[in-house]
Amino acid sequence: MRVFYAIEFEGGIKEYIYEKLLIVKNKSINGSFSRKENIHLTLKFIGEVNNNEIKTLSLALDQIAAGKDSFDLFMNRIGTFNRGNKSIIWIGTEKNRKLIWLYENLEEILFQSGYSKDTRGFSPHITLGRQVKLKPDEDLSDISIARNARINKISLMESTRVKGVLTYIPVYTKELV
Image 1 (cartoon, rainbow, N blue to C red):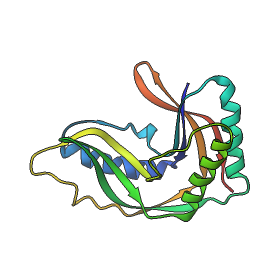
Image 2 (spheres, rainbow, N blue to C red; image 1 turned 60 degrees about the vertical axis):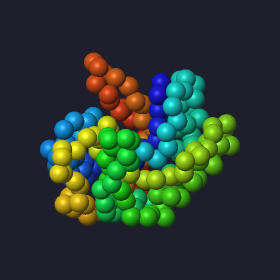
Image 3 (cartoon, helix red, strand yellow; image 1 turned 90 degrees about the vertical axis):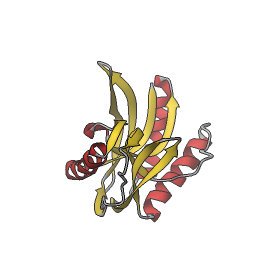
Image 4 (cartoon, rainbow, N blue to C red; image 1 turned 180 degrees about the vertical axis):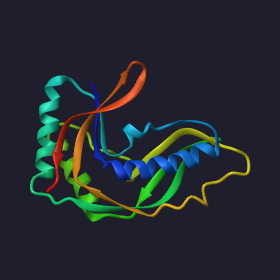
């Protein structure tokens, strides 16, 4: 089973993000764009695990979420990670100390359980599309991103294919108070 920790968004926020994704898609020649149902912010990617590890990973989520308040996360920009003439297009967030705390504590708890720490650091973003090639004379500068999202839960998600379609399924979810 391939898993990761994710910040899930409520329906209205997913809709807002998806509307921005459709604008990017219309400005593009091609790309692999996220399905609305899969929109999330990755807190930490784990990778392949066996069923026995799910309990350990769920307990780590219990630990970091215990007694933690829900919080606001402000989405404030659109950006790219360039890969040659194609890009990963994403929505970025304003620096958020509660989100960073969750990430850092999750890293430490998982490290104590035998998982390796992420050497790339944490760059919170919501992926809109991969391998995106924009149309000539198109750019993303006219796409305004300014939206607050209330973060109410964190999930351990399975990444799988259902009838050939990439699907993210919550394995374990912890509500924030």
